[in-house]
Image (cartoon, rainbow, N blue to C red; front, side, top):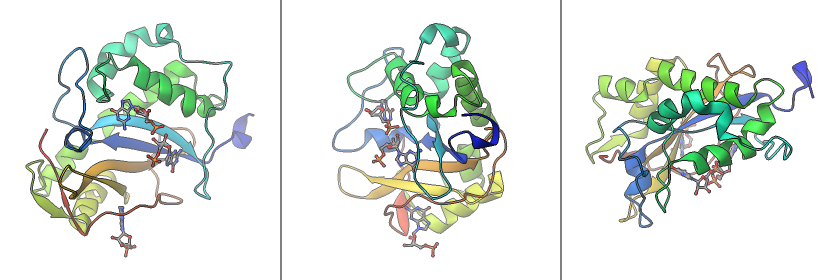
Length: 208
Ligand code: 5GP
Ligand code: 5GP
Ligand code: 5GP
């Protein structure tokens, strides 16, 4: 696989709101190195096809090796924390994302490039600031899905997709934000296709 024939069309850059991972009935566990910032964290950079399907687990011969990203670990701990239980140092989350999704991008970026690219995108895309500029804050209040999407579009220039989950009481809430990135991993684009799944028209933005 090489060049324009590499096996995917674009990326979803997926960010998660930790408050929405944690206030579910299953709960969450903070990393062993402490509570992450009250900010969006990276979930993954996911190669996707324009028809909505996606490749996964593309190269079992190129498994995650934390030694290749030692210089990024400190930034990854802050920007790509795992909230899954039991508590971990987050490397198992990074390993899962590289093995499942990252190996499908290896025609364009190696392991170090993949994590560096995700961190670069994260630093360029300040979702919390875009939302707060529109008066949308993580304070357990409910906000209109339309207003949330408009605020992010004003910030990034492109309409995002919002994935909701449910809190322990069954309320839909802002869980993940999908931003589309070109094949090279550098330019924000209009999404060729959107995911699916339900949100209410008014959704909770929980504290963290
Ligand atoms: P879920 O079933 O919870 O929506 O997704 C489970 C996992 O499947 C995600 O965390 C991600 O690894 C993968 N996944 C789900 N939807 C998509 C998609 O549209 N594109 C890609 N590339 N991966 C997805
Ligand atoms: P996906 O396949 O959905 O990209 O990745 C989800 C996998 O990563 C699941 O096995 C989940 O347990 C694990 N994981 C570890 N930490 C986190 C986290 O903070 N958020 C999410 N959504 N999944 C996590
Ligand atoms: P429309 O295309 O008219 O904005 O929305 C069509 C349907 O998709 C409506 O039910 C709307 O609530 C839902 N929808 C629109 N945008 C999103 C989104 O970003 N996330 C989710 N989960 N549903 C959305």
